[in-house]
Figure 1 (tube, rainbow, N blue to C red):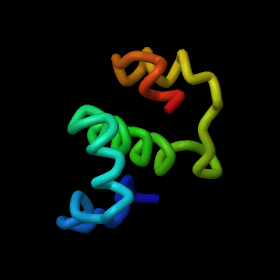
Figure 2: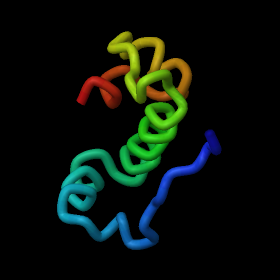
Figure 3: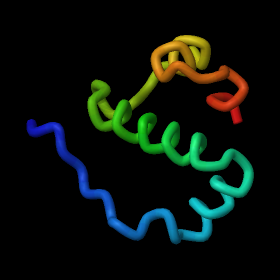
Length: 67
């Protein structure tokens, strides 16, 4: 399996993504895509709900991951 998934170049303009950016800024947008990448690579496309581990891996505050 190749480590690839489609990503539209205008994804940032989606209303849900704009709402995410309004709440969390560009940091939240970057974390969102990092989580999508992690899901793509994870067995069964599922992640643990150990938010502290995800936060550490992505070098961000756990509150951002939990939200």
